[in-house]
Image (cartoon, rainbow, N blue to C red; front, top):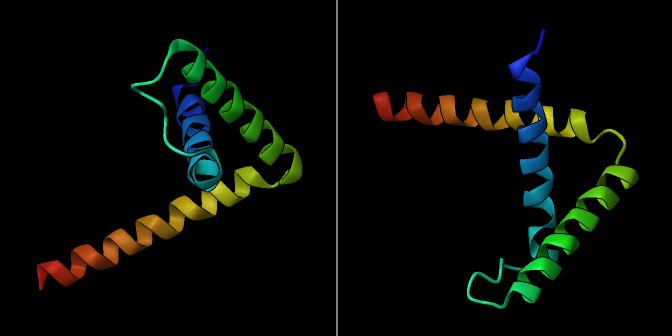
Length: 82
């Protein structure tokens, strides 16, 4: 039996790492050549793998990041509701 929520967890972990490495990586070269796009994608994959190796607790970091963002969103919604 497949557990769809596991894919969701992986997506959040990948998004968390993407946010962290975004500055190093720079923007996606949408108007660039296919070669430029391939180089960018390869660099992103490499940076993400490197981050995971250097931060074996990245899953817990991503989880805490999601919790903190949810708490901030709840607080903000509460302020707007008043």
